[in-house]
Length: 433
Image 1: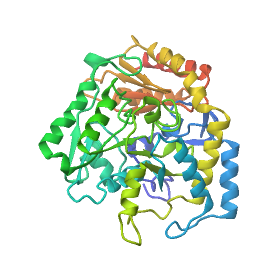
Image 2 (image 1 turned 45 degrees about the vertical axis):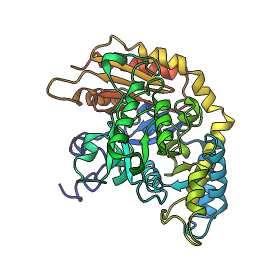
Image 3 (image 1 turned 60 degrees about the vertical axis):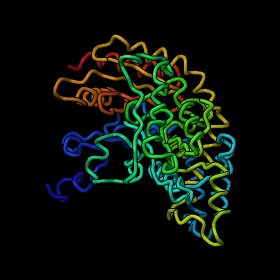
């Protein structure tokens, strides 16, 4: 087909089976609060906060107004050697929400850029510390740094050698020991000890940082075992290695407070963020950096530019305005507290799916759930994709990743929304082979 007779042909869609989508397109044309409107007018309950991102619900008037007002006053300001007040105000607000000591904020435009920023900062000018440690099944964005430390095979295999000097911890998912765990599983903390073996292999003096998601989201909701993150913190501190938490998904109320770090009581040296920072209304990411790392780079450099890194749109005025308005909504409506009050109800609801056809595991943390389906023989991932399509066609947006259905709805949800999501999945999973 040519562009003249196929309006869908020009767009190469990301992380999408383009041929399958364009043969049977499913499109969204509007959104409000907990629902999307499909192009045929149907209401679609948003079970994924867009893409783990719209934590305050869709098209919130105060966020829309802040973006419109700023666009009319200051559409763009260059971030190199100049500034604008909104970016400084947002940095101060975000800093105040971070764990103690992580009070320096570097703005990016996405989670992928946040991860690559943190990885570039990690060596801190220490020439020998160049090695990076990620984790199997980890998702750390799609920059070359992020896919190098990431551990999702299909995200890596098309793109050559990637960064050198990277090693990986094992993931923590084990159905034999952890299936249908409610919240953090009891088994698996010992897997953090593998880091000691990696240190022994390469030498602590060669390792700049370890990066993990506190809860691995995009790979299918892998919840950290009790004591696991604490062990990683203990080992990295012992060897002078930085610990980076990729909280692009878990920050801003998704698993409790402002960060998973704060909720779980384990403080890393850097936190990467995006998504819920602006309620996804304008692209923006950030890295929260500990004072000792920041000061080591800035104070330890000669006069002039201390860090040769940044983006044309770092701290963009519209993104900063969206971020400030989003943080106001979180605070004024008590959304983190509201979501936390539903954790028990959410857990009971999603675990009611145990015993349903094809479901081999359910796991949860905060307002997140992973529902794992038994792979279809000879056709892995197809069963979950079929359920994804059936859910959409029946008024529910879920996320399919591998053979796992993930749920992470906006934090404005009510018990009735939880009942509808779980009831719809329970009904539809029985209809697929």
